[in-house]
Image (cartoon, rainbow, N blue to C red; front, side):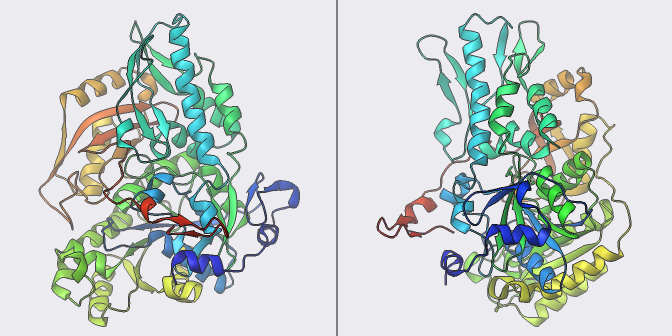
Length: 546
């Protein structure tokens, strides 16, 4: 059966029952139908966190979210009090090429269709808050421009892939200027939403957003435009995390959804903290490969939220590693130990980063396929052991929590045995250049970093602004390679990273560094997923959603 058929045949429990298993009281949640709710309170626990990350993604597939869900279901089968904390899907990938973000096979969060589409309206609220600020900016300029705004750096947003909106003109005929659209998952409002500790922190961060500069070169903020209160009002209900369930009834908070290649790639701090307050073990994931999502989770989110994970799981498939070793996608299911040896160093680099840079326990989860051979698995087991990581097979797509029990046992053992303190890839008191160079050299394995003239000029401006001191860096980089060139697979050596531009995200509280050809508004492929979707208008049954 397809993912959507499995989801549709599942028997969901009322969300009130799922909430009761966590200890959430009825007065502390608002239900959205039978199977979804928003939770507005914290419990009294202080659960441990395991981060699920992965190798650099390949067309052969890795299944990070699927493994995250299967791991949580496996922990539940072991009798553990466990909860998931995941990101919400963006409609861009849903209708584009990547698909949804609710797992697959027998490791899914439900209701799959609702979550992958409009869910509880959080993305719409974020998009609207973003565009409210845009409308306030243009209206302020139209009404006389009392703040003497000279340059607007704020972009509009839309939660769809639409390359035609990357560069547009607005105000044609009366106050014409160039503008740009970012996908909502890359917007600063999304970052603020996901990093805010509470509604008061949200309002402060929204007010801190820099929308441009005035005629004297001073920053103009959303607070100066008096837009922060209205933006907060639009987001007040969305700030409560969404509670849903897996196929096996494991509670899951699904909330916020920044991309990891162009944003910080983690679900909301509030959702993770809420899960930690109600469960003994929290399984969370960060977008794309460990060089992006895990680095930002550890260096940005953990710093902001005061979270110290107890274990990191790196997901890989033999097919994906063989693709990285030069095998065409159609041949990756064939046994090929030599190709695996060529592609496996990508996995080894991510493992080494976890154990050597961040000083955290690491478990490698091999997302299992029936074509995997014992010889190939033993090779990875031996090589990962040399790097301080245990290897476990995860057969969760086919067998759900039962297929995740071995992985769950290993992860729980590491979490229970860990009482250390994680380290970071860079100190916050380093200069902007030093932070970027430390990420590139330590996390990516680069020889160094080159900065364009535009980037150099931005750094000079930022270094004169005391508010930019001590901020983390959010790297915008291709997800497909450790380098800034998506064609360089595996574990490249002797390469340099080029930073072409930087943005100051005052509300989010970090500096964004753009590398390579990374874009903040993706485009649709030649055959987008939307073309394969259909709805039966008699039964309202949807097909083609995955």
